[in-house]
Length: 248
Image (spheres, helix red, strand yellow):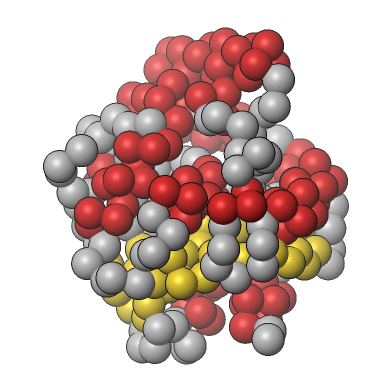
């Protein structure tokens, strides 16, 4: 792909740290976490396809990896991402290892090993995409954030306002880059040669297991479990996540 993503922003000073948001979020999400990180890093953020300023962009995970490295001018950077952004980060690191100095993911996954289960997930994501388009963004966000994995998010008007506001874009994101579209990464994690830190919340059992597996598969991987946190650990415990990232 030859186009670039819109709206790249920079805040802070220090080594470049490119941060990728999760599904329904935007580059404005995780403001407390990003502010803390900006004391040590120059934080680079951008809206992923289907979200925020890039709501009109439709792209698969490998295509998003291409778009990202074409958009970020730095020849080398630390790369981090949460959930959907973590899956994107894994694809970037695998496809362009020479650009990624170090890798951090929060609540990321290797994908789904079984082809049958992957197809079933695609069907579920298609149904969810149809629902988003049918009920509209406000009703969908209410339902999305009512899930158990998000039930313990702190009340934060800025975080809610930072959520993506376009139903079509979110639907396209699910169809183009949902977990069901992702090829199984478990067999290629050994290609991750950069330092890799996989984080997950203590009460996020599925993704805690994934963090262990991701770190174990990488050549220089390690994992840390964030205490008293669920899926969005960087929103529930931002200081603990930053401390984990900065730990030697």
